[in-house]
Length: 474
Image 1 (tube, helix red, strand yellow):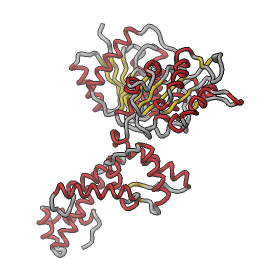
Image 2 (cartoon, helix red, strand yellow; image 1 turned 180 degrees about the horizontal axis):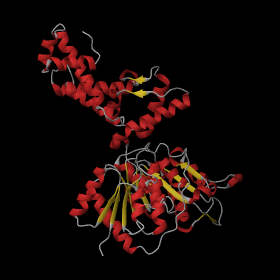
Image 3 (tube, rainbow, N blue to C red; image 1 turned 135 degrees about the vertical axis):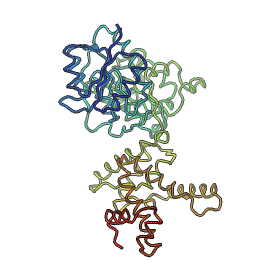
Image 4 (cartoon, helix red, strand yellow; image 1 turned 90 degrees about the horizontal axis):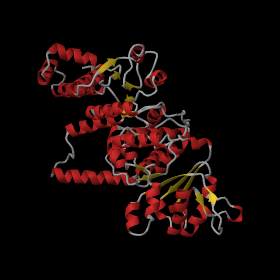
């Protein structure tokens, strides 16, 4: 029998897109506009795969719907689609038993492929895996923010891999938030209640002290691996660890035990190893600077942290978060970036990544006296970068005095509003556009209304109505 797919979403356009795509692919399906309607149909029919939004009208949302449906049949795969594509949404959906998580907007062909995989999974699955609810802290991971596809992949790895208990390797540039991801993996795992999250930044330690910090219990000191007993040991910049320390760590990963410095008897080690590096460990292994076997052992789950310049559409929400956070710390109202500043920041290379943006927001909160942050409020290094960009633009444009056209300036304004997450921007832009045109025409004709209307291509009645709507006195 062909699998039966249910699509549940209050958005008519979403249901229409799925209906067309499923019909084209000859996939049997039904659509519902609410979770309540789907639950009613569940009394007489059992689907093989359910595609559902999280937020829907009625008495039940997408996550609650998963629980209700799984009370009837725990093996029905759920594919969650949502516009609220943050870490919390991803974790919530996976902890409720989601098969896959698709943030809006999504590619419909990709969605069809996921549905096919879910249908195969439904056939092959014979028993439900035991899952317990993840305990999520209200304060941790609040800086793992992003709606970009690259960050959605990171959220998926956290949601799926947190409870696995296997080693994790996080690759990415400095300042991208690798430690935050490691902390999220710990806090959403069962080890959260069994032990601590211990972080060791190898790059901040002298080479001769690295082994001592990780494995020494001399003089009554407690080494990092013992402090993390039952929990998670995060080793940041593991690429800078000396080979002797790498050998000891390999024993931990292989045998769940370690040999303390100066001792001959190994001790048990019940820790989860999460490591990170800004360097290519495989390449270092080929150069003899990193033990290949250790790399293969810690690289069970591999997470790539994208640099900020490759997810610049996340900058508005990150900046807003950091400005709010800094304002709370300073006991003041949050500052707001103007559209010009926001567009400028989204075009920067950000060599320091998220950490650099966070520090900038702290600086602006402290140093800017007004509420709206203008280009002139940015630190000198950013202003120099802006001037350099202007020179390049002017050079490209030849002898033009204006580096950009009014259309380009309008585009920058729109980009800024969109990146700030604003909606219905035409309702703001259109009246202002008409105001500028009307005031310019009136000034040109010395307030001659009939002539102004003719220049603008309007009738006299239209001009009179616009004057009233825009509160222009002449």
